[in-house]
Length: 498
Ligand SMILES: Nc1nc2c(ncn2[C@@H]2O[C@H](COP(=O)(O)OP(=O)(O)OP(=O)(O)O)[C@@H](O)[C@H]2O)c(=O)[nH]1
Image (cartoon, rainbow, N blue to C red):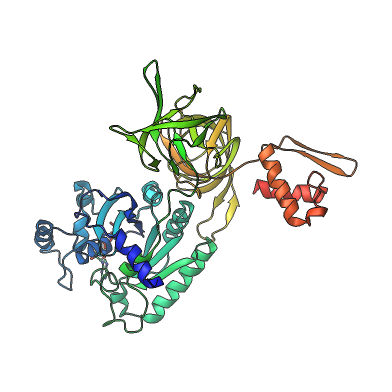
C-alpha cells in the first residue's frame, strides 16, 4: 500500500456512523476529533456549527422540518434558514438570544466523526470556554471579517493554548459581507498567525468562510472566492490529529478501596492514562510501595488489560497500604510527586485569586490544602506576562502552588487528567479557578558558598536534572556535576524559577 493509501485506510478505520445528536457510542480506537469553536458574540459560531451539522446531514428530518418552521419570519436577506436555531436546545438560550453553556454536538463524514463544543462568546463565560477547551484536539476561532481580531480572540486563543490545544483554524466568517475581499482576509490571517506564533502555536489554517451561505465549510466557496485555493473547514478537521490520552505511563487515581471479604482487596478507579495488564509492576504513590498486578476486574468480567477511560478494580499481589486519593502508576514512568509545583490557571470568580490564600485543590479523587502565590498575569493585549500579586476574575495567570502534604501530578502536556485541577475556596465552596500543572518546582533546600564552590542542596530528581544540564553543556570527561560556578548555579536556579 502506498503512503497516501495507508493514510486513507487509517482514516477509514476512524469512520463511525454516529446517530445524529446522540452521545457517541464509539468504538474505543475510532478517535473522533474533538473541537471547540470560539469567538465573540455574533461572530456566527452557532451558525457555523449549524451549517456543519446541516451539510454533513447530521440533522434529523424532524429537526430539519422544525428548523424550516422556526426560521419563518426570521429569515435573513438571503432567504436561508437560521442555522443557529439548530443549536438552541436550551430554552433560556432562546429567550436570551445568547449561548450560556457548553453544548456538545456530534456529526460525522464518511472519513471521521466529530464532537464539537459550542462555547459562549461572552467574557463572563470564560469558565465554560476553558471547560470546552480542556478536552478539545483543535480550536476553531471565529472572527467577523468586517471587524477582524478582538481582545476576545486573543483571550480565547490563549486559553485554548493553555489547555494544550496545538491546532487552530481561524474561520474568517461573514466574508460575504465584505464582498469576498481577499486583502481583508489576508490581513486578518496574517495578524492571527502572528498571535498564534507568539503563543507557540504553529499549526494554523486560516479560511475565508460564509457560515450562513455554507461557503468553505463543507462545500467549497470557489464560485465566490476563486482566489482561495486552500482547504475547506471540514477538510482540515478530517485530517487533524487527536491528542493521545496515552502519552505517559499507566495512572490509576484510586477512588475506592473495595474489601468485600477477608481475602479480596481491590483498588477501584478510572484509568487516567496508559494501560495495564496482569504481571505489570506498579508503584503506589505517595507511599512509594511497589507491587505487581495480579488481576483486572471490571463490573462484569476479568480483563487481560485495561486502558485510559476504563473503570476497573485492580488486584495486587501483596498487602499494601492504599487509600482513596492515592495513585497507582507504572513503575517505569512515574508521575511527579512533591510539595511545590508551577501552574497556570484561569480565575473564575469575582473574588479572583488572593496571594498566599489557602484553597482546596481537587485533582481527580484527591483533595488537598494548597497555598497559591500568583506570579504573573497575561496581558491579553500585548501577549506579555506581567508581574502580578493577585489575579482578578477571568485573568490568566502563572502561580506557584505549595502543599502541606505530597502532591502527585503529571504535567498537563503529558496527561490532561492527572495534570489538571480546580481550586475551591474553603469559605464559600465556590470553584475559583481551573488550572493545569506546568512543572514541579524545586524545593530548594539551600545555596551556600564554600571557597569557590557553590553547594546546592536539591532533591534527588532535581539533582538529576542538573547533571543532565552539566553533561549536556560539557564533554563527558569535563563534566563535574557537583561543582558548578556561582553564575551557573544562579542560571540553573533562575531557569527553575521561570
Ligand atoms: N451574512 C452573514 N451572516 C452571518 C454569517 N454567519 C452568521 N451570520 C449571522 O450573524 C448573526 C449571529 O450569528 P450567530 O451564529 O447567532 O452568532 P454566535 O456567535 O453564535 O452568537 P452567540 O450565540 O450570541 O454567541 C446571525 O444573524 C447570523 O445569521 C455569515 O457567514 N454571513
